[in-house]
Length: 253
Image (cartoon, rainbow, N blue to C red; front, side):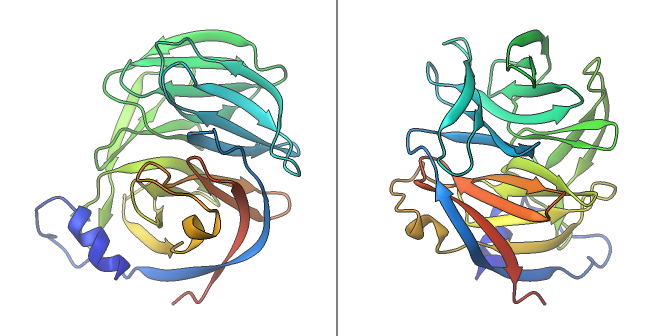
């Protein structure tokens, strides 16, 4: 069923070569934690014992450091009211974030979340992550765009493909063991992408988590991936969800 859903999202066009095999995975819940139901989650990452979250909506967007046990903000900075916050990622001692349609990016100090600068870019901003020395941006198209994080000069683009077909609507991004994990907007799926080729290596079906979180409404979709590399913990959540989950992959094959 989830292969069919991704096929419906794919843009027209047949593969020119045989696509690589795609692993299919389910999940099991390891633990759940409280999450602020007013948070329109756009970006998520783990650093030094805390979850960092970016939220959207005009007049309500923020970047925050969260207490995992309570879900409450230990520190936060609001974006200007005319900015619709999207994804965030850590680069050294900075947090770099993008906005939806404004073409404006922000930099904050990871120590105190104080603004340290802005930048501009073309197109929309959805999710961001670091892959090696590149900042990788999703923008609603099937392309991942690679930037120099210091200058925000675009270096290259890679088209993400499922069974040889381009897949748009890639949203929040996280890098785990060199691969890019991406929420597919308005679905229960996370795809794991080879950043060198754009090929989708595996699919994670998280059907049922939204209901478990008590989330309702079309906007309350899965969005948010964070990886604790030290303890090998995978966290996910969604927009307006009451829970943030630690999950483990299951039934892969």
